[in-house]
Image 1 (tube, rainbow, N blue to C red):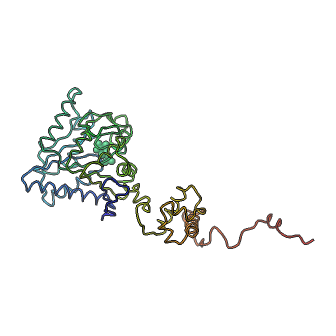
Image 2 (image 1 turned 60 degrees about the vertical axis):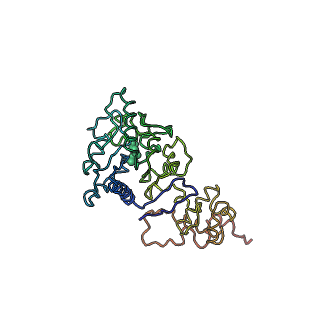
Image 3 (image 1 turned 120 degrees about the horizontal axis):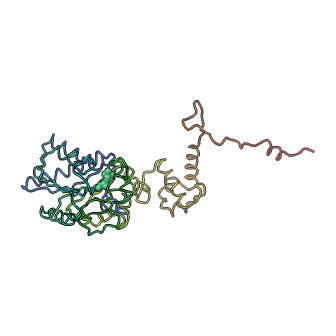
Length: 368
Ligand code: GLP
């Protein structure tokens, strides 16, 4: 089920687990959450969960509902704190995170209403500061978060902690990044209807959780995920602060993992099992890196480009270059859907050079 779950530590600074499909990752996360809830139940304690919204956690919530309905998982001992809420926002509006959480999870499980906490988007502006301090205090009073579930925005935000957020930031009112507003527009019909501000737990609030799981599904998250996992810690990508948390897992599907070095250029990480597809990717990558046409790549280029392993397999650069060049050449066609009844094994070069009438006559020796 997991595609690759060994820790990759050459480039990755966060432990990443890659699943083929998002649904499989969601089930794994839900199982861990259920484990925490049951463990706390046995001890007669409350499980304190930090929850997220957006499309990413929906599969996790569906599996938690299934566990409740079919495997008698009770949420009676669960206390939840949601990460964030748009501001201003009424709880009964379709776009509110209150509405989302009830629809996606709370209405289908036996959680006690008094144990649910979601930042209040209805407050007057002068109440916000005190409210945010109280939200932090409530989390502390419950003994802190046992687990914080996170999605990631394309800006690298966690909760609504946009680029520029401090690692020590706490629950507060923030301004949304223009990219976040664009991404949120799908839920608000038009971009101009998206609130410009939000209430969010801070990076510091999130980092205090004893366990953190960050989820990312789909190719649109691949680039920001790579920066989060492999980049340096920086407030330009707030999710990168997670690198200094002692107990975090990043759970992704194969599409969100596409930009990770171990997937994109695995030859930089270790030994590869080379097939034609991987060889082609590596040679094209080397040609771009060396800024040389494929047919001009030398053995030295392969060695300098961390591809000596491939050289051992294929013998020499000359053979590799020709193999890949020919394979690419065969992708050029005037019949993208295939030409019926044709055999193009030799295309595009024939066995003999094609000679035009003009050049033929120019080269034909005269007999006089
Ligand atoms: C919103 C939420 C974030 C969430 C992000 C990603 O901005 N405030 O907590 O992580 O969306 O959304 P999605 O999971 O839909 O990609």
